[in-house]
Image (cartoon, rainbow over all chains, first blue to last red; front, side):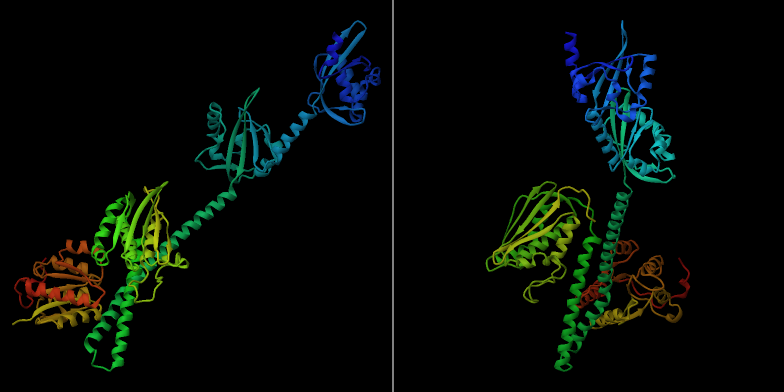
Length: 482
Length: 154
């Protein structure tokens, strides 16, 4: 019975007498060390100890014999077993003194810890090769473990960190408050980022600081909760963020400058242009027919040129005003805006027999004057570029997430696909002058209005069938693009 | 019949000529004087310097952007002067800024006109001005020549 228990024990059992000779092994011992028991019985237990430890082993045995207690062998040392084939394996060994009438024996319980060692090694490898700093801290704030990246990041050797308070790595100005933060974390330990919303800094050995991001992972253990902090140096990211923010600011500033420039230029050009236009006109009024035919023709060219330039400068001014003179968004009833625009086109509609069909339209946060201008431009366009048939225009809106999607569809002459984008640029006209009025500013202004409101505008068209302008606008004021 | 006297305060000679041209083609018997800055305007109204003995105008056309003394200050001085404040002042400027419009009326301007860029429109406005201020409206009787005794009064 007892023999059966010994045999089926899942640990290796080896009993030696006071001289160190093996007197008993079980099946697991045979399996672990690769010896049949006949080869072990009677031999010194040193045969199972690797060569390099063998010299010290009798001494250890003698020491144990002087104070025999049930304890683990070689506390703090790594123990290895030596197989018959010369290979080694890590073991954990428990020692139990057995006193018998014929003398003192020691029963060793041997467990193969290859798997555990492997797991430990993997864990160690993972921690060491982790590209983030890892610092394990106990409840008192004492550093238990750091990895290679932590050494690199903070400039300390690990021996200088383990056993120290974690506050060593915290900049002086935050150090005082840190234990309190730790206490709070201990009261409610949960995986989370440290100092949400605050900028965190690490303190290097040389006294310099660097921005960090820290994740906290509480790990319950027998001796209380330890915290594994994962530390990432975000200097580079912050540098990129700063550069991006700078870039964005710069871009916005240069956009504003450009807009201001366009405004000032077009505004200040008006004055001298008024003079040129007025005086050429006055010349024409006074002296037409009094000079020769060539003079009349030249005056006519000058008058026309000045008039045209006035239109362009005026249009440019209107375009730049979209950005510089826009009003803050307010709830705007688009249905009412469209009604008013249609009313304003009443005469033109009647004249060409056109109809405008309007679906349900929402109230959105927008600049009311610019909304009126937008629909005015699109409806005006639809009427201007009509085909042979009386114009039919359909205005609709549908909700798409945070945006409203509007469409203005006509049955006009249509636009070739190659122009679908270009048509939104300033002063792009698709038709020779004289066929249609205008300078090609309307759609550029429309695009600018839509984009200033945080939306997009585009079109679909088929030549001879019609054009649909689409645009999106945010339903509620969030953040204006400008 | 005495001519109707109009003082144009305008620093741009081309602009001044344009107004003159347009006024002169009208049917009214006008006497147009032109000064090019705010100080000259005040000298003219007070009959000072080279404007000694200058008769008081019946109507002032005042630009806002003027050298030396801006139109706004000219407006304040005239409307603060009991001898001059009865002269109607028409602000004739290229500015269409809301701030300028509101301020001008607050300071006592009688009307505010933004010069249109188009000559035809400008001509039509000058005609309308002429028709309204110089024929329809009854203006206070001209005080005749400037009276030096009033100089220095608030």
